[in-house]
Amino acid sequence: MTDSATERLAQVYGARSDQERRSAYAAWANDYESDLANFGYLLPGVAAALAARHVAIGDGTILDAGCGTGLVGQLLSLVGFGPIVGVDLSEDMLAEAGKKGVYDELRMMRLGDELDFPDDGFAAILCVGTLTPGHAGPETIEELLRIVRPGGRIIFSLRADEGIDPGYGEIIEHLQFDGRWRHVESSPAFPGMPGKSVEILHRIHVYSK
Image 1 (cartoon, rainbow, N blue to C red):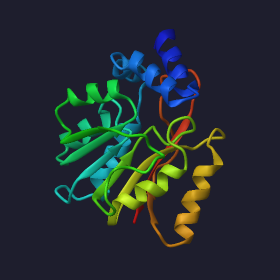
Image 2: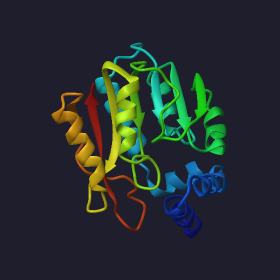
Image 3: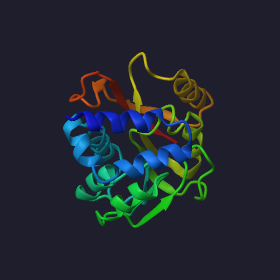
């Protein structure tokens, strides 16, 4: 792990506007995957494993929400999922994702806004490493629920330590209380980037509409 990789990560999560985030990701896109490999980034692998457990291959289109350079989409494709659609805020990250050749469609969208997809369209949605302050806020969850079909799965990561924003838990509980989705499974807490000097714990959650 290098100081430059840690600096890039800090710039991305310290960005105060969409333009700052786009600029930070544009500067990081070429080195993003090698830096995350040095961090020991585990979230995509755990999320893909849970997708393989809870989503039937061939059941319909999968959305990779906040796809970045396509780490999650690549893993999903390797185990047989498809079609796969990816969306991300960064044009440069989408360009890297496109090089993998696993996405049927890649579109630039901002999570937290209304997404340009019809209701009930996706068999499953994965949102990995993105539901965090400064990226996709709690309001994102309800919009993802709108575009997954009844019975479809939403698989997402959240911090599982004192750094978690309470707004995510509040909307998760609200949607469950209203009967709009149900909890299927959550992983144990684990360090999402065990190669970093500061340990940040995550869980991957699975909910069904």
